[in-house]
Image 1: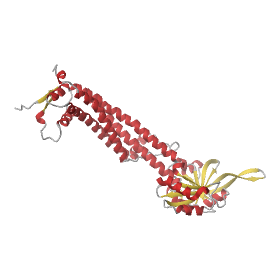
Image 2: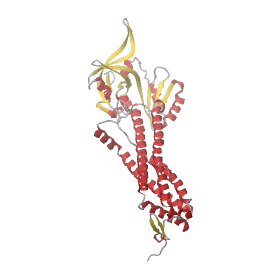
Image 3: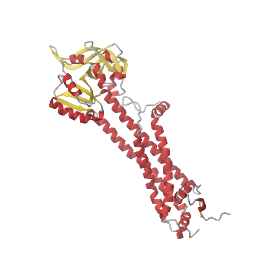
Image 4: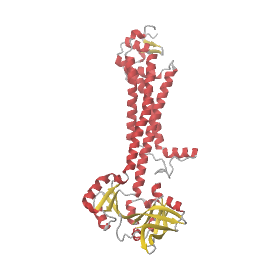
Length: 437
């Protein structure tokens, strides 16, 4: 017959003989785990525990997915913008830059610069079959432009190398070509705003160009508003002689652009104006970074609400187990030990919810490119319209550093939520708790 002492409480008897003296776990951990696994007479406590786990899991998963999408959005935006724009631009102090070959050669001597290409940048109107569209006209040298931009890799029709001097060919963004209704090898009329004075007044300069290709970089701003022609043809159209608008540079590391631009500005002096992508497009990336921080704070509040549901769970658990706590105190358990028992119970609820949230969030973040199109097909809708957003697909870039921060913050909130109920349990007076037992 087993005569070992036990704790006879309303949730059953916990026999001290079941806790080996040589057990690796201290008895506080054992009792806390036992309370978590025990079948409760008050099912409402179990319901709140499950709700807390689900809330923590949902909040953690939402944090991981949202931050991964915002990381992906930032990375994709940077890649696409800098695939068309330049890391660093050198422009003349006046209307144009003369002697661009010398400027490009001096710029390439910097160890952080890998390539340089001249360009002409202007505004114009494109007309085809009574349809007119405004566009940015960029004159380039195809053989050099491929070294600083990714237009050649995104050709959807024709060849980028088909731009040859004197042949007046033009490469259009795919959306721009669709809006005009023009096809390959057809001719569009380019209207330059720089006019020429005649007896009838000032007339715009007009020239027909043959469409030799289409490109699609995946950003509606460029696909619908950019047209490329050979540098020599652009110089003739806009009467720039041998001058260019500037020189575009590609760097070894795009994040070194501010430092390199400062060094180049010092080297060239006031004759050349130097700007980098952090100035021309920095607002986009700062906005995404601010949104990411705000979303982290907002979604952390969801985790906090779920974590503090643990307070309700443990407060009711303490009330339900006052007799057990009193008996533990009479057997020699200290108030600190009683606190540890309920901290273990609350932490286990948080850890289970955290583990479920981490698993679900990571799985969803890694498969967002599959899940979102399936939802769009199911409900016949599109989350990101090309006409509204810069990017028409939902990207995801899971960064394990973010996952670690989310896990640490969520676990800290869970532990914080266990402190008051555990402290209250440690303050129970055994005589008062056992008076009516």
